[in-house]
Each structure stands twice: as C-alpha cells, then as structure tokens.
Amino acid sequence: MTSFDEWAGLYDWATAWKQDDIPFYVEEAQASGGPVLELGCGTGRVTIPIARAGGEVLGLESSARMLQVARRKYRAAGPLPGKLTWLRGDMRRFSLGRQFALAIIPFRGFLSLLSVEEQRRCLECVREHLAPGGRLVFDIFVPDLEMLTDDGSTPFHFRDVPHPETGRRLVLWHQNRFDNHSQVNSARTIVEEVDETGQVVRRVYRDFQIRYIHRYEAQHLLELCGFRVLELYGDFDRQPLDEDSTEMVWVATPRQG
Image (cartoon, rainbow, N blue to C red; front, side):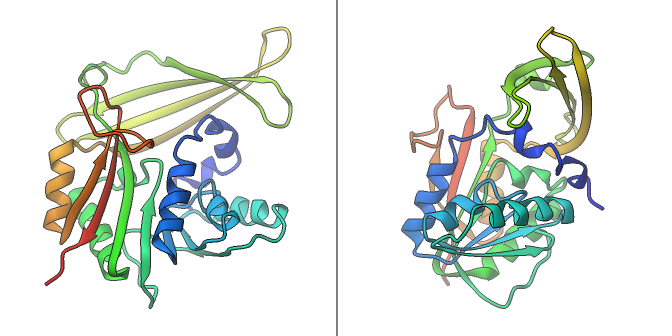
C-alpha cells in the first residue's frame, strides 16, 4: 500500500479540470522520437494520450491501485497506434535495463519526493536511463509567499467540477499546513458531492504530502545531479517564466563528459 492507493478511485474525476499540460507532454514525446518514460504515471492521464498519438511510452507508478485504473482505461480505449507498457516501481530507485529519449514527471509528481536525498536519487536514476541527448521534462508550482504563511486552519474552495458518471456537482476544497523548515506541505483535499437540491450526499477526505521547491533550488539540484537546464517555461504554452508565473516547467539534459 502507498498513500496514493487511496486516491485511485477518485483521482480522475477530482483532477478532471487538469488538461492544459497534456498537449504539451504529447508534443514533447513526439519531438523526442521516443521511447518515453513517465514517472508517477498514475491512472494514465498523460501516458494514454502519448500512446494515442503514436508514441512508445513506459509508465512507472508505485501505486498498484492506480495502475489497475490505468490498465482498465487503456483497455477501454481500444487499440492505440502507439506502444504502452505499465510497470509498478518507485521513482526513487529503478533499473529498467534500457534507455529513453525522454523522461517526464507531469503534474508536480516530483514534489512527492519529500527530501533532498529522495530527489537526488530520482534524478540520478533518470540520468542513467536517458539516451545520449535525451531530455528530462517536469513541472512544479511556483511557491506562493501568501499561501506559505497561511495558518492552514481553514479549508479554501478550489473549484467545482462535474462528476463524470452522475453529473452531480463536486465541490473541491483544499487545506494546507506548511512546514517552512522542511518545505513540506501536509495537504488535505476535501471532495463534496452535491445533489440537485444542494445537499451534500458524500464527503471524502484525502491527505497527502508534497515538498515544494523554489526556482534556484531546483536549478542547483539539477546541476548537482549532472543535468544542464535547457529551458524554463512559466506555462505549458512555452512562455518564459516571469513574476506572474504560477508554474515552472523544466527541460534539462544530462551533461556530457
């Protein structure tokens, strides 16, 4: 069991709003020529679209239940032009016996690594699995000072989304408790399912932790682990990072020599 197993049954509809990164990662996969390694592939939110676009991709995921959902979605999608392989494994320590043109860690999956040591082990594994000229692409959020200093006692409304099966309104709330010494956020997502009369018919709580990373910390970490930063975007339209950006999209390659 991992902490992500509890998410498997609700992950897709609780994150259905997140679509803007998928075309970006599909484009990166196509430009690389493949094969592609996705770390923390979850339920196949990005992996399956890459295969649908004709790419060869291996999805690595630590949660057995997430992979069950991913395989079910893959079967339901019917024959796809690309090649897709699922593998249960830990992004902090893996040895696949092959190399990839591209490694990706979408939707802030890298932040699930809660210490510098775990981050370094992951990056070192990635470097060993990239072919010459291969790239690593991942995204993380820009830490917000106002949020980091919030006391975390009160949940805040994040957004409403429709339930894909019942059509009922799902109200998503977030609650954060930041430890600015360790840079670990102990987060809670609250999902309320509301019926036609406005009554909450179901409420689900899911807790998780992430370790937020600042811009130059990420740059130094990549360089420490043998990477050279090629690009740093502020969004998935490949705009430069600026003071108004809420995303950091990193593109790096192993240093040669």
